[in-house]
Length: 310
Image (cartoon, rainbow, N blue to C red; front, side, top):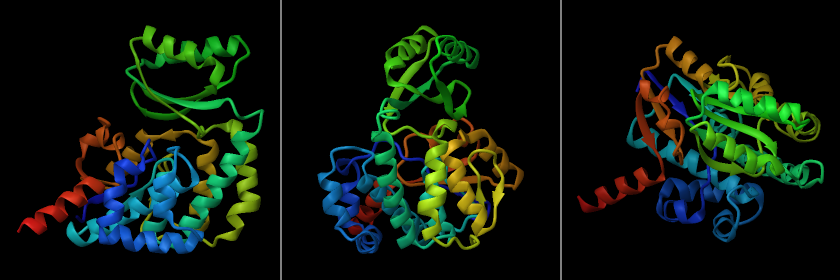
């Protein structure tokens, strides 16, 4: 896989029902679970099985565990040896561990620290009604009109992710969500899901400042073993300090997937290995311009079954 890039997708809705079997039976997952449980000081598998929300602290930790576990599986069974690594949105956490910029244990601890602060920050009254809404098949000019109308009404909203033509994530106040969904329908678009907590907005500068001051100084980032592609501008990140800054930028900068794709093409990537639970990035038209290898818990489980049958 010499012309391959590995992409750790951002975290979509994922529950124990979706991935629990993989975590219980896959040897790579079991090994990573043991490391993660030691890192955070509780049994990740048990806590995740009892979690009632898809973005809790333990759900975010479990997402990192599974992303790295399937990358371990892909290295052994598929010969995964990429040129570049990308981790859009909170896929950056797994990408950081995979690249060697941070140990797996520290990545798990960082994920837990960020999730705890995120929960505190968005429980505050002034932030509690902010959500990020994901939608497709909506022309950019129609979205611009929606945002302009909100602005005229004195209402805040911002694009959090530019995924491809017609596919966006927008952060806004929840009391405007029903109107926004109707406007999407009126424009011929389709609403997918709403994320709580929200992500990627300049409004979250206080969250970035706190993370830079109170959370990230506890972790030492090494120069990555392979370059990371920044998800907001496509720049190649090759230093530990650069990886740290990439994490902080992700709090306030929107994801621009086209920038990542452009960098991959520029460096001769022909194949993209999307590694982790994903129903989004491997389906984007720009991603499918590469040969796409989907490596997720289901594939690893099916491979195990085929070995048993032989």
